[in-house]
Length: 321
Image 1 (cartoon, helix red, strand yellow):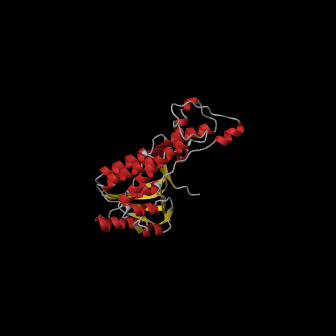
Image 2 (cartoon, rainbow, N blue to C red; image 1 turned 90 degrees about the vertical axis):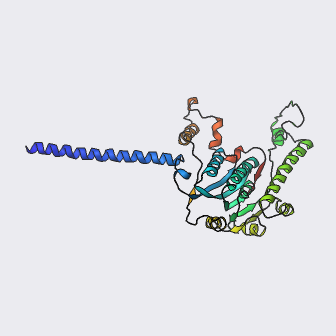
Image 3 (cartoon, rainbow, N blue to C red; image 1 turned 180 degrees about the vertical axis):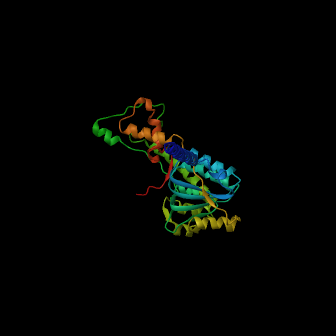
């Protein structure tokens, strides 16, 4: 009889242990699913918050980032977003990327107030994007400005001559594919590139003139490519106030009438679903373990290598060493 009771007690104890581990496993799976949804951006914006102020980070090398542009378009349409704070920390990038993001921010500003809070720097295309806001805040030691455009190309002619390699060309016209890294470009090619740079430079100057409390003559004096501290930038009217995000929010409240109790929430571009898988592929490929069936090819490289290696076209970027 005693043996039967012990047996029953053992079975009950086993059932309790199994129930505990089943519940634990269920909770772990649920948390993993929630984490995956959070990483995918399922809870961003209005889906996860009520009325609020959105924060968007503009960092690193600026390109025509489709995910960022989609994010800005979502903010534009979201009625729960009452204002936007751009946090900018960028040396610039492509003029096309800066232009695209500038226009996206201006579309938001047509519907709700936008302010920019500069971190370490907002230079070149980074400053271009800052001017899309209605109010620019920066630290005293922040870097702003570098208004200008640059076109760079490598020149390997001397190296090729030393190793005895020549590049032969048959072209439809003398200016096709100029300037070339394989020979000194003809004077006509430099004239064409200079015209292209001047067009973009004048567009940049006009943009700053339109967005800042400065006339074109004043902007031209500032637009010689130099950078300014936040302190100097305030005196030159390149920015509007000294401070950080709290000062930017204060402006939204005092000048644009937003509720001071509104919370600031970070909006992030949606992550690629296969990012972890791709990184694993890259690691396997670099260590020599990948086969042709892994699907890693040269078109995947921009996703993991530094963006500035793949910049093309006209650049508006500050090169700080």
